[in-house]
Length: 465
Image 1 (spheres, rainbow, N blue to C red):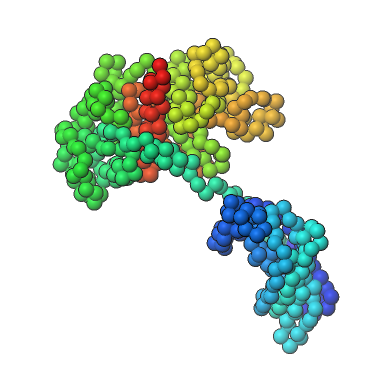
Image 2: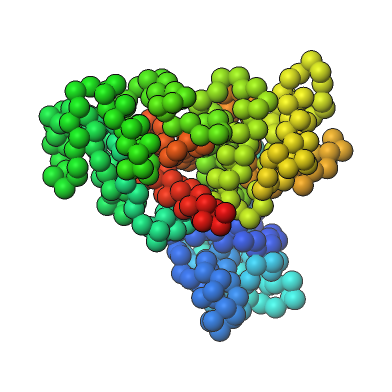
């Protein structure tokens, strides 16, 4: 165990010194800005910093000042020291990658007040003085020896959402006519209103009119400008909405207050639902703070244990969705419980078959590999240690899970342990469907933006044929 031990006033002699060396990194600047609130663009805005006199990001001056405090508080005099005053003159800027050595030297003792004055100097790796000054402290009079405190690690995340660009692009394309099923709860009305105010949907509220108006009143939202189709119950609202979608009257369905199993059952009716030549599948777009780009996770909602042909549709739906979101050549990882194809583990056999389908043109537009376990997909280091080489490792855009249970568990783990934000749609039908429960209004708005991008992509493809 390492210890901190002080030097009392009586032990300190004129000329005594202590020092430490630190290298300034980008993370140091970010942490100092977060801690202090000092977001001067000279420290955190690369474009602005390039136009200033130093033509680069420079560190906060008081980062160096904090290093002086560190020496005084942990070495000389050490624990028990009380800061009284500090003067600093900044001589040169400190940039990312500069290594500073801070040195304090006792130059005067004031016995009656137990005070010590230190000269303070900070030099960079070129031996240039970047800071100098004096510090006055009250030195401890009692000997202190304490174990060093183990500090928590700091993990920084990108400060922006990957979903922002989707919303901006969708707004430029224009709003979709949206059929909202059974919106009898104020949270649903709030979410629909937010998407409408964002310019993403033109809502059609389908359900019991009195209950819809009551929910709007509770939400304090004026829906007088919305079309309301009065039907008596949830089942009638589902059937009417599906009919409107089949007739091309709406471009997106929002589940609203309908029971998901009831809606799914009607959506999958062969002659009266939303089915096309492909199977329906749910694609969840994950904005995981620790991953550099959006991840599409599929299928997490519809097929409990899909067979190979359904998995082909699930995969193709996800690839087309990724292309709609602007991914040029989606990298698809087919997840399984093992990286080796095994006859006793169906998920590995299906993964290998999907990859062969892609080679033969039965799945188009993406780069597939599998079977792969989740750790190998996300971590290139883990895959390398296992001797696995793949174009999707560490770069995956799409994760295809072997079954719904696996996908649902993985989605919840990433949401509650990795703090991902999730938005998604049912794909492969006549129109996309916002199926998930509305627990975050803004994420429901993002899902509407995804639907706009998806519809625009398929419209353009149809025009090219």
